[in-house]
Length: 126
Image (tube, rainbow, N blue to C red):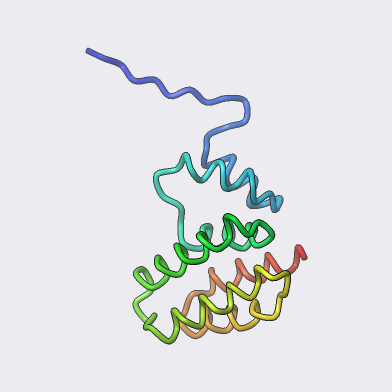
């Protein structure tokens, strides 16, 4: 019988490293840890996407991927809402925070306070 072992370093599991990196606002470390996870919750994925806003090479893809998940996972999201979310996120990549308030309001409208809180946390760090 073959035995599979999971080793945890002193840094912790990928999930612990991911959460710790999100908590301190380290987008690169959070991204690296997220690649090791089987699934990332939608609000955590948004937090990661926001943290990547200064890294154009990763940010554009992260935005597109996140809005796709948002559209699939939140029942109230139609084409107009998805378009607004993508445009608002995209505006953040240019260093502006103008779209952040639109995002927070949009998330509250669809009943996702956890997503609005992710935006508020990101804004507080800026």
